[in-house]
Length: 195
Ligand SMILES: C[S@@+](CC[C@H](N)C(=O)[O-])C[C@H]1O[C@@H](n2cnc3c(N)ncnc32)[C@H](O)[C@@H]1O
Image (cartoon, rainbow, N blue to C red):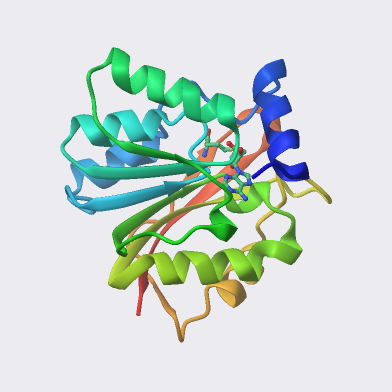
C-alpha cells in the first residue's frame, strides 16, 4: 500500500510536524451532539489522524469507523482506544482505494479535504457521496487559510458549493459557525445532507 502520500503523511507523524492536531476534539462536535444534530449512528471519519473525535464518539455509543493512510496515526489511535477500553474500527488504507462493506449514516470531515490537493477534490467528493446512505449527513469543516498553496489548501466557499453541488447535497443554513485555528486559519462549519 506504500506510495508517496503514505510516506509523506507518515513522516509528518514520525517527526511530530502535526500542526493541524489540536490535541482534543473540535469544539463544534459538542455543538452538534448537544443540539441532537448528531445522534448515535454508524459514522465514518476519513483521514482521522490521532482521532480524538473517534474516541469521543465511541464513548458516546456511536458505531465508529476511522481510516487513515499513516501507520503511526493508526497505531496511536488503536493504542488510545485500548487505553480507554473503547471500540472503533480503525483502517490503515488509502481512502481512494477503499470501499466500505455498507454505507454510513454520517461522515465527519475535518481537515481531510484541505489536506488533499484541489485536483483530487472531485474524486474525494465522489467518495464521500458513495460512502453515505441517501439522506446521510456530512458534518463538514471547511478550512480557510486565505493563502495560495497547501496543505492545508484554502477551501473557498464558492468552490465548496460548486464541489458539493445542490443536485447531490442539501446545504443546511441552520448553523454556520467559524472555528479559529492557530496561524490565522479558521474552519467554516456546515451540515450537508446527501440526496
Ligand atoms: C491534516 S491531517 C488531519 C487529521 C485529523 N482529521 C485531524 O483533524 O487531526 C490529514 C490526515 O489525512 C490522512 N490522509 C491523507 N491522505 C489520505 C488518503 N488518501 N487516505 C487516507 N488518509 C489520508 C493523513 O495521514 C492525515 O492523518
